[in-house]
Amino acid sequence: MPRAKLSVKLPQAAWIGDLSTDYPDVEFRVLAALPTGETGVGLVELSGPNLPEVIKRIQERETIVSLDLLGESDDRTLIQFETTEPLLLFSVKESGIPLEPPVEILDGHATVEVTASQDRLSTFGSQLEQFGMSFDVEYVRRTVDSTDQLLTDRQRDLIVAAVQQGYYDTPRESSLTELADHLGMAKSTVSETLHRAEETVVKEFVAELDDGLIAEAQ
Picture (cartoon, one colour):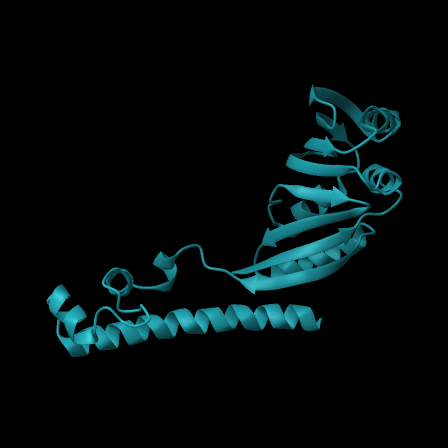
């Protein structure tokens, strides 16, 4: 399934876009976020200089329904707030994509990573534009959840055994014949199974590489 990384330019009209631009050295790190009907609740860690001033500016915004300080130090503050303009939350909600924290916001730009089908990614992009946000795609890559989805059990076990026996070392510590003898399998069976596993892994790698090159070209 495609995984995309986007750099989203937040509108100046939105409080977080405005304040992160006014305080470009302060990082807003969204650790959790939840839409609640017409509003959204966020857990955000702020780091950088002038944090008391930044917090005061946030509290003064009309779109902030509530704000609680959960922890603070010299250069870090953890806050929970409710806002009437959670633009990123609205965008992912309308496109059916879960927001994957952390989302890092710095100098008016949010770095967002999402995993979804190509159609949902396209819808997400349209929703961002609808809410007044432009974006650049840093990459789009295909992903698999685990090797269980990429290789069969037999292929995976054989690959692991081949690595353990030094078949893939340079120079090789185990020949194909020695590997087959160790496993108690026919040499032809080991050769064919390894070849199919290697083919699957290499093709998946090239497909992911192609997706990245396509994203860079865009």
